Image (cartoon, rainbow, N blue to C red; front, side, top):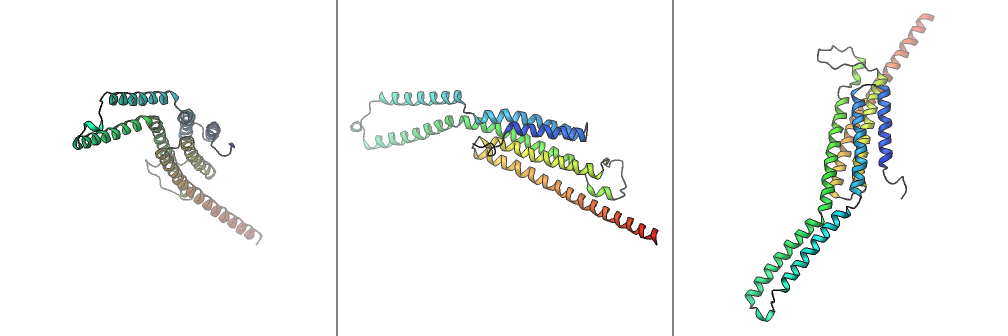
Length: 252
């Protein structure tokens, strides 16, 4: 299979590490860099977890197969000692035995199904727990961009003692928001690793929820970036207009 048809967990981890390095260089000792470091650790754990989930658990399969075979052998062995024949039974007894037999078959089938799906349920539980962690860190990333309001750069705001510190320039604010968007996108890619080698409908639905969450949060961030770019363009146009007016006045 082509390397471009599947997500490479190692390359995903390396991409997050590169992003973490970029954030630390641009915003050293910032909360965002620590969040990205946490995301990098989760990505490393995801590589091992997704690989484990994608591999068949032969020990568990052998154990389940042995239990099922022992149970079936024991059942048929017990039936062989009953010594029942159709001639020795009347209609009422035959109906009762048939009904009891059907009930036993249903119960035995349910027990076998429970044992056969043990591996899937164990892997599903581990994947869902990891996906819940990814949902949480997506909200943590979103918390870091909540106070990054682009309009504050163009207004003379009256700050209160509880107002957040706004020390970023327009360029730094764009980079900060862009880093948040990249982290959210990579969070969705980490989630996708769990569904890549584990074809389970419950896990796939949970992965889609994480990807929808990160896409929605990233869309809000890009709205801020677009607004910031438009405001900066307006300021640049206004500055150029004032400069041209000043030049005309000087030559007038």
